[in-house]
Length: 103
Image (tube, rainbow, N blue to C red):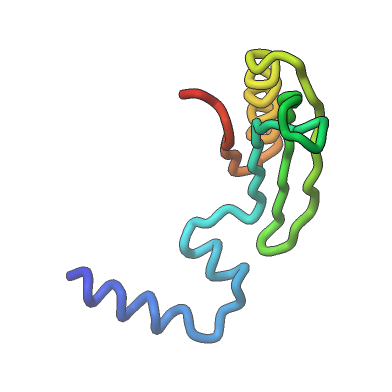
């Protein structure tokens, strides 16, 4: 059964653009990854702040990659990252939380 489905999928995929295939396969056109990571403030890599960065794709196109905020406390960075993720989900993005979340 699965072999037949795969053959039909391949036959249907011929001649379709990546965007069309993405819609067929259920891949989101708009993806947002929200990262919590250390942003070092010195060359010795001893002092750091917690950064919250966002990487946004529309299909294969990189739309934005930037650090939105830095915090002295990890809990604040984690809460901010979750709020950003909720915001982007509401805007229709497939959103993923990544990085040092401690979960």
